[in-house]
Length: 175
Image (cartoon, rainbow, N blue to C red; front, side, top):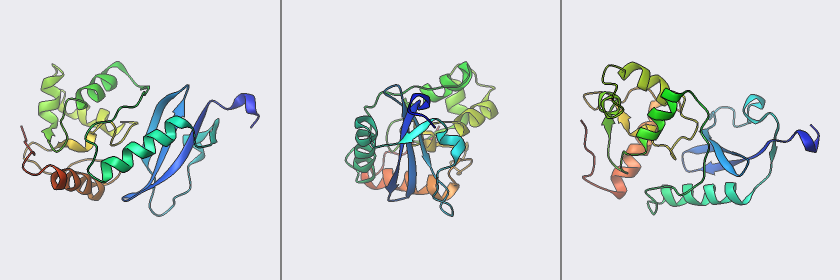
């Protein structure tokens, strides 16, 4: 890879819940994603044309995630860029309305998007969320509060919800 072919930067952050890939492109965050526990190496498909380097933005992202895991941050203030379909972007932007410690059902998210019959499509869009934790898809559950679907595993989804409950007890609402 020549220097001129580098399009972005990435680093691996060792979070309390396992390694997280952080990537930026053009000064905007483009990916935060838990990496496989059994294989903490970065998949080349996720970092093609990216250089492993700790930039100011990736350092700030790591700092804000550390604050989140310590219960000192409930919202993120990071510039990001989302690539996806119009529907996916609408779903991801709607997730930003779910407050820390709160949960919504997929049906509520679909309804808030003005698409009450799109529950399944909302779940699929959430599954393609490129900014895990930053865009809080872990706060969406089944209609009865059951844990369903999370690209990083239901155990991690449960851990994230328990973390938020620990630092914000009694906040969890489901509708």
